[in-house]
Amino acid sequence: MNYKQLQALIYVARHRTFKKAAEALYFESPTEEYVTPESIQYRIKQLEAEINVSLYRKRQGSSTVLLTREGLIFLKEAIEVFQRMREWRGMFFDGKGGNVTFAATQTVLIHRLVDPIKLYRQKNPTVSLTALNAPAEVVETMVGEGTIDFGISTRRPDVPELEYVLWKKSRMVMIAPPGHPLAKRREISMKDLENEPLILLEPDVRGDRDLVDEALGRAGIKKPNIVMETSNSEVISAYVEAGVGVGIVAETATLRQRRRLVAVEIKDLVKKSEVGLLVREGQYLPPRVRNFIALLDPIFEEWLKTKEALGMESTEDLIPESLATDLAKQVGLSKGKKRKESC
Image (tube, rainbow, N blue to C red; front, side):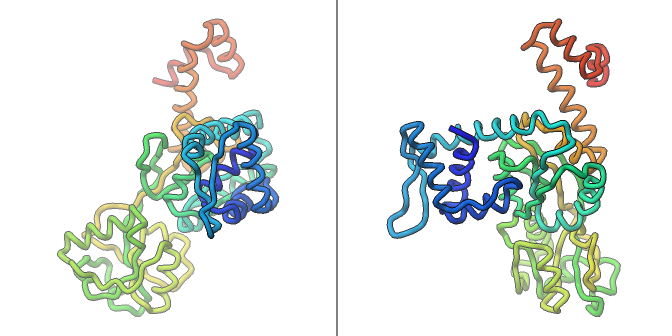
């Protein structure tokens, strides 16, 4: 049983065909050269032979791959082992090489991460970065499976296995072309948008769309004039600029705005959009990953210090006192100093 076999099973379970699994693995893995669908299938066949269990079946007359009952049971264990293997592979890098892989929505990648990525590359020229564009629910899946180092998500996760650290809050705004009547105002209300052609995020995009729907409901607008829905704020901006309608987006989507659009505050849309760091609970973060996260914001630097202090204290019951003292000395901390910093 090896890393690539478990990786193949996880990707097939997520993408449901060998072809899509091979394509996703190529685009999402910084070190993986393109593998054929046949290679993905062969890796799983090797895994089946090793554990003597049938893990998948193909739907008749289709390329769809379904896990067997045994495959679904094994998948949970495979994800846990894969996560640990991935952590072991990165555990001994000193931060001066290797790769950092993360995922975020397109809006966050464009409007929040350009400057931090540029600065990180200047400080760490030997570390490569893989930045994946994915909706929030896919970011959660990839973090949970351990196929990325961390995610930047626009919603809080539903599962306790994932840890979410709030980074930024952003108000929701209306965007419109400069010549639009509402663009001349400093602020508007949801009632002002009742008859406007609206371009919104899809209902499946939980978080920001939920905020808009709640505000429409509070304003008594039962049938808003929604002319277009999409999964991406960048697409909303493009069609607003084209004159298709007005949009409602998080102000984050206007930070590096190069389009000729005006953002106007919506006074009764008071709840704010969120973006935060997403990692697995108890996940080991290699130095190069910690350095990237700490660079994003002092909030994360403090979180990492707290996380490290808690991790060191949790070893006290597992290793002898003398060894714990030696380990603390090696990292430049006395036990007294460590306890003081974690208070």
